[in-house]
Image 1 (cartoon, one colour):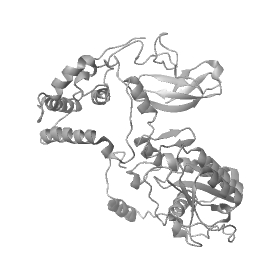
Image 2 (cartoon, helix red, strand yellow):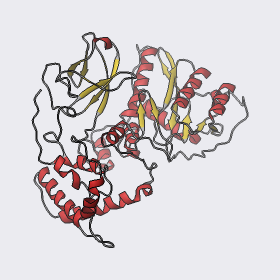
Image 3 (cartoon, one colour):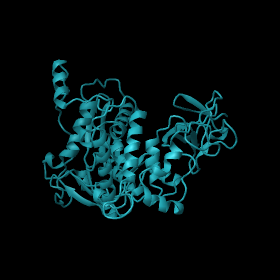
Image 4 (tube, one colour):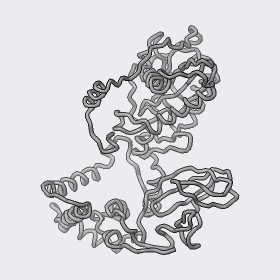
Length: 453
């Protein structure tokens, strides 16, 4: 509801649910137990119910749960990351054997970056005490941790995941006539949805995937690549931004604002300087508000320094001759999607059809979408424009042979309706001691060219 623009407190939601007699169905069932005695020496409980982690891949939780269906039984073995509740790896099968949990661990290990050696916490089930499991953990440099015998609260975060999963997709439904293969497919889709779509209040109303993307972490196809606390890897959009403006991005550590204290402080000063002056004014349109903000920003840049001569604007004027000029066209954020080339050598993206070379029929391609362009790339190849305009254009034409706004090789400047604010802020990173956005005003305001294919 918050994403749709409606803000309500939790108490209001609960009151409305009571009035409408909406209740969350909760069912109590006998839990599957994998305890088979003391097969190997026990290990201490290192976590001690501390399920908080400062970064991904520091603390992992794992367990095994059972789903009883009319067609048989299905077992799920996941790994839960304590950082944000992400499920980086899971296996689903019809038998709770060693292969099920070992395959899950091998998949989880494949997501680790060099130097990452998380603690993996489990109960005292036989799967986590057999020699093969112990060897996998030892060879990967992981640290084992175990709950006390018969004490499920020692692994409560993982048990809570099982509870949410079963309440939301398993309990209260009739599974008669559903095959084991179909149920395993439904369960697999749910975990993908849990990682990528399902929001959590503890993450600020974001899904685990969205939360990691806001921190500059990477989601790469079917596995999650995350960075250690001292070396966060920018995602694809940040990398494209850096390449476009010929800059280098040096990410700060996760939740370490002091790594960029100067930026944080300046942003606070600018926000106060602008908001304090405009708090009592009323604006009836975004252009009117943007113009007022721009005037305050110029006043901030021309404000004299307190401890030295000059201002931000005068300092930038001195350094400008030594700076690299900005590109003639602004950077556009892109959305990446996957598509399969059909027998008619077309891909369908956003309900539009685009033609690609016929040799890619039945192959999967990555599609890069911006407001003006559509480009595709295949495994091991670079991004290729979809033909449809002129030979030198990187823009694309929809299947119906009309052409949208062209950029890059054909044109320069700013397209009609493009927001100036984000472009100016992004461009400001390309200069040294640049007064905020002053150099990019001419390239982002007042230019509305019309292009024809």
